[in-house]
Image (cartoon, rainbow, N blue to C red; front, top):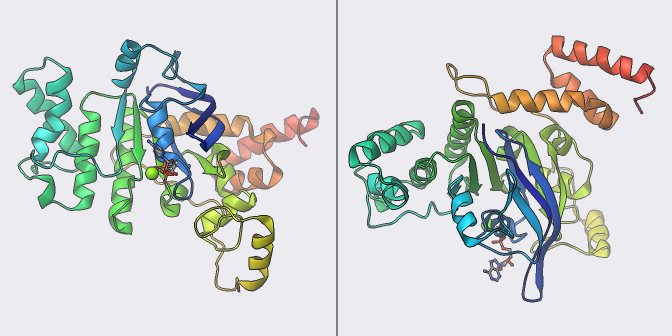
Length: 341
Ligand SMILES: Nc1ncnc2c1ncn2[C@@H]1O[C@H](COP(=O)(O)OP(=O)(O)O)[C@@H](O)[C@H]1O
Ligand SMILES: [Mg+2]
């Protein structure tokens, strides 16, 4: 199973520019989480801080007990081996072919023989759907394939945690869906912890188990997908619907007066509300069920009584009928004991 990442009270500024403050969240092991946020809210800075490439002023990031903020350089080197990172541009070496790009971390960080390396590289290329493309150089292939190559390279050291920066950037919606399916399938096969940073709404609604959002230098919320996708928090609602009305402005957050004025001016008739639960993507037929998804469903259902009634109703409506009946019964018992609001 993948590692747990516990972020607490994290604060980062560059000079006098505060990027975000007091960010706290836990990436549950083996689950897929996504962090949303408008451009420039510090999502990439967050990923780099988690792996210790950027030093925050305050806070901690524990990876199974080791704090990447305060640990020694040597410990950091060790902890980094547990991460696979897929940067926004794929970060491939333009002069190397895909095979050599993907083999690079193995040649750099292990003493494996070329025969062993060949087996691993071919295996990962198969996994991400790049089988047989090893001889091509990055300049010859599409953006989607470059992402896949970057992903294969992130996988060769068998990471427990995968961090992905905007997997959809530069991809059309169909390629984005294929790539999202690849993450679901990888998670089903390898049970690794995954954090994806994105501003793609479709990806956010269909892929992750847990969702969070950065806005206005804070983590607005982080939790099970059902809570975020049904949230009535104005900034979340606006973002998930891609609306102009709301606290998010053209280039930054609006002040309250501007937001109120716009709400009067913008005709909202054609801004459709897509909020609400949609079914989550499932592993491709023939693959095992995702154990992270099962653990998470149990966790959410067990804490159903702590959620707002609206969210509870949506979760029960979306759950398989026999599961829903079982949880309605449990909740009725809890309510009988005075536990339900
Ligand atoms: N190394 C750096 N030095 C100074 N400022 C930086 C550095 N890296 C990022 N920033 C600033 O931090 C802010 C957030 O950047 P980023 O994390 O790239 O946003 P996002 O990924 O959400 O679009 C931006 O204003 C950016 O200019
Ligand atoms: Mg970014």
